[in-house]
Image (cartoon, rainbow, N blue to C red):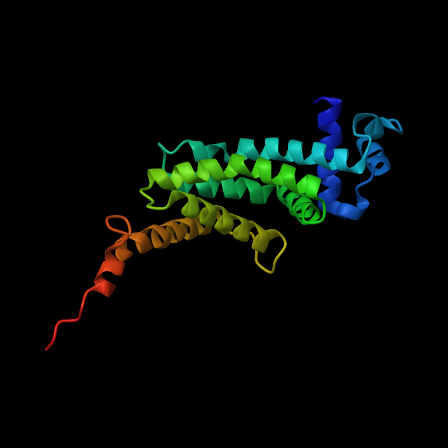
Length: 205
């Protein structure tokens, strides 16, 4: 592990354990067992330290969610496995929650957060496209929102860590409900059908 990776990994752990207020250059040096000033030499400002941490976190999470790209296998099982791995290492997810909240107050961090988020949205869009979604961009965002809700409820909310089978069943039900809604509404074959029918005069009895 390089010094840059060590500093970023230590920052991730500090964010998860003590929150944003506890993340300082000195705290990272101490927790990583580095000489004083080591973190400052690599990331001089707090903004630079946050960017370094978010970049490392994105790399780690991208490795976990690389399963999204393999749509040849059962997608429900792949998503459930990726979510389970995220929940098993709650440290990374809690750190990401901290960074997401901080990004609402720091425009420079928001830009980085949004840019890295594309790396997760695109595979989700590809996955629902392969499943036959009529609106893959919207459905891809909904899939990520569902996954985020599950992780937040389990790690920061009032829920508990779900079993793999519960994860799999929940994802299967979510995808079935989301994709079947389009089919039932007729949007997959003729999205303008409802408008035309509404405009047609009602036959007299």
